[in-house]
Length: 155
Image (cartoon, rainbow, N blue to C red; front, side, top):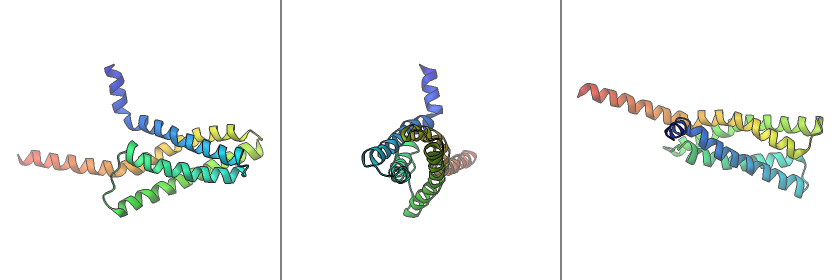
């Protein structure tokens, strides 16, 4: 049981992201399904709206729950939000390309393509989210460790 606890602690950000990333993917897939299959909207429009909803969900859950990022100021929050949206904008392009190729060129079912799409995009999003939210926390840890070493030398 100890090894399980050790693995969880070592990869805690990954496990949390996996849970909340799955929830964001679920939000994306359900929103896409409602828009495309129930309201009969075009798949690219449905994909865009689903992406917006899921991306906003992801920003707030990643910031608060997964990476415990605390904004020190309004500008810091804006920087995180803009960085997050820009990187997710890249994933949106990837997302849209997968949807277009899968549905318009390969003639696969929209929901099958959407699920494959969310797996591939989720992997990309984990890496970029970690970079954005962990940057500030890593800087704070480095400062804390440096101050700790300096205070130990002076003692």
